[in-house]
Amino acid sequence: MQQPPRVATVPPPGLTTGIALVIVAPVMSLVSETDRKSPTPDALDIDAGVIEEARARQRRRRFAAVASTAAVGLAAVLFGFAWNGGGRGTAPARAPATPTRPLAGPPLGATHLRLIIADTPPAILDIDNGAITTVPGVVPGPYTKIGAPQVTAVTAAPGGAFAVVDRICRACANETGFFIGPSGSVTHAASGESIALDPGTTKVWVLNPGHDGCTLRLVPSSHAAVRSPCGLIGGVSGAGLLIDNQIVNPLTGAIRLRAEQPLYLLQGDLGLESNTLQQFNGGPGELTLVNLTSGARRRLAFPNMPRIQNSDSFNLQKVAVEPHGPLVALTFVNPWFAPGQAAYIWILDTRTGRLTLLPGFPVQEGIKASDAEWTGDDRLLVVSLDSTGTSQTRAALGVWTPGQATMPVRSIPHADGYWAFVASR
Image (cartoon, rainbow, N blue to C red; front, side, top):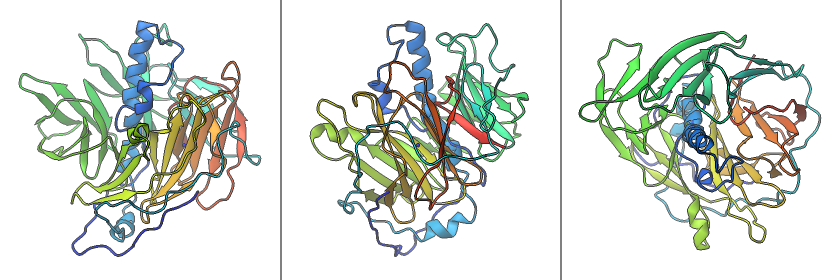
């Protein structure tokens, strides 16, 4: 968490597009540029800084689990995508307003949904009655918001969510994964230096340091571990594993592609490269669709997001991939947009390259306490915490169905874990 650029639709000969497994799940790809500059309440606290860094790494990882979960039928859609070798793209999409208010919209009725949220310990929110239930058994007590261990990610998994706990220690496996059911059941999954859910399954990719580099293995699996580049697993898709901005073949450990810019995994073998730092040089940012199998690239027009005096540029913080369709929600944030932090959410249609502004946006919100994720039936859920007051006290939830001109909104109870959540029935 809509105005489009136009694109050609005739694919060049020989273009093929891979397909990922079917199911929902968003994982993040890389550390957000915004994380390097967003102020945090605990900026001078060493433990808080460590936890914030762990969460920053995981925020990019959340989305890629969804990336590889595009429906099998999406193959025909992606095959028709037209690749352009670069150029300037088309006219940029323009934002009709500047962020001056919190998220608002027509009243939202019953949703019949629950949110599994990435608090420490995790919690489950019943959206319709407002009840929040703590999930025990994931993080050992006593609980703390600034020390280790902490929940650093939740992503969609079959029957619920996959939560990652970062222990931040040198004498243990840094990350441990747990499956959380919608009723609060907890099952241990795997532990390792870096872990990521294999989308659509209950198996986990585990990366561990070895005597000569690192090893990569799917758990549980009868296949032996393979040598692999070391680093953070930033996501999994039909193209492979994203490890420190490289696409790695999980069966051999070989590097298939090195990205030129920060990379997000999308549907099938599509990826999105983002370079928002160009704005600091007086020009627009850069967005490029990449076919991670063929290497074909296509520059997209960067959306126009007005700045106010002395404010920063808008940086891409989050990517959320529609599980059974061609859409991607791109969240751009500005941590210095007075009087509160600000966000735009643009909807990218990967078939056409068109960018459209999500109804209800732009808004002023606490950018590190808000999130946007897709449901299993392809609705976009947006949780936005108001940042215009002296404290973040108002939490709003919006539900948008593709094609709607508005996004209904309702208030929900305040919680600390809305920066990452999974929707479940």
